[in-house]
Image 1 (cartoon, rainbow, N blue to C red):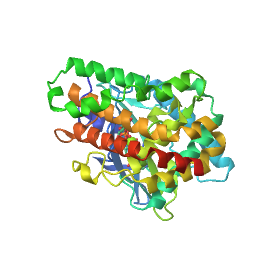
Image 2: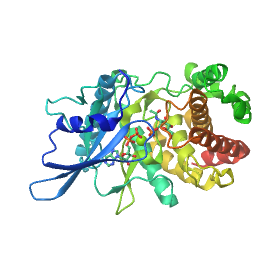
Image 3: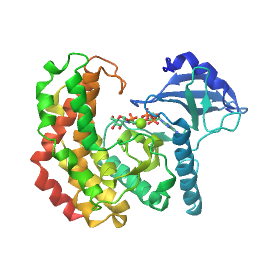
Image 4: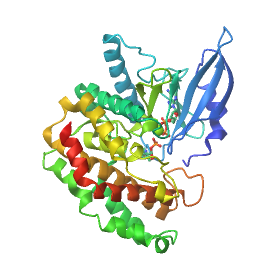
Length: 370
Ligand code: ADP
Ligand code: GN1
Ligand code: MG
């Protein structure tokens, strides 16, 4: 069944959960590209406002909501156990899936939409860009810790929520198909971007080949480590809660590292139109590398550490390829708010890739330092 506009079944979805107070309202929330996210405002008995995150899972993207929610419940339960043992704050340091009135992990509405609820983690901020290098360092420590904590999680119990998610070779192949089909007649306007990808076909295989040759290990990874997938404590600035767990599955640690660099080691929005503002920032690269290796370093192999620059470059290239593919196919995957937005997103990624290529030796030297 095709997904209707989330607003059409929002009220129905609200009836699926017991929010423990009176619902005051629900409004769209956040800047995610995939799911439909709402913030639910309720009033408890004492008259205080209690917030929740209500999300309709994008089931076009995540076709197995049962498996996906099983992953999230499994991982968050596991993390909660560790946080508890370490005397941490279980309500803030991990997400908690709130059950439906029927005790299920998500609510299915009459149109087939799948909705889940998390208590809102209060006293936090979610950043769209790095404002202060310390924030980036904190996010590196948080994602590094996440990786380390999940090292003991049984990966064989995880469902693969999106097949070949960070298989860059396969992303390249899908791009070629979209290019050949040219469904919207847009290819003629983006020849430089097309050439940019075609010139890097071999690069797309670098990490996948090493994985297949057994040179890089498969680990439990997050796979979507953007800065805005972490909540930072408002007062202390520490990265406290890793969110957006839809893509937690077996993957490469290098990709978790790389996706953070892609999004955070620059000073512009992902869809910045003015490419002169898009610059890969080596200092931020260094800060993130330091934080990530301090938190997760012991768990990583020498081959993984050596390949960190490749993680950064390939996650950026892959993401640009995905934006370009979606542009060619008519913007059906990433939510767009204006025409040409996916093309702009693609262009920022390719500019960053070029910058990384120009700074390759410096990136390698930084990695060697930590
Ligand atoms: P998407 O997959 O669409 O990116 P996310 O799960 O990242 O969706 O959620 C979108 C946004 O909602 C986040 O960037 C964050 O601002 C906010 N958010 C999500 N979960 C919580 C939570 N438990 N507490 C506070 N804010 C949250
Ligand atoms: C999507 O869901 P969100 O906005 O956190 C995408 C990531 C991309 C990112 C680009 C499931 O992340 O893979 O890197 O957009 N998530 C999915 O901003 O495809
Ligand atoms: Mg997100």
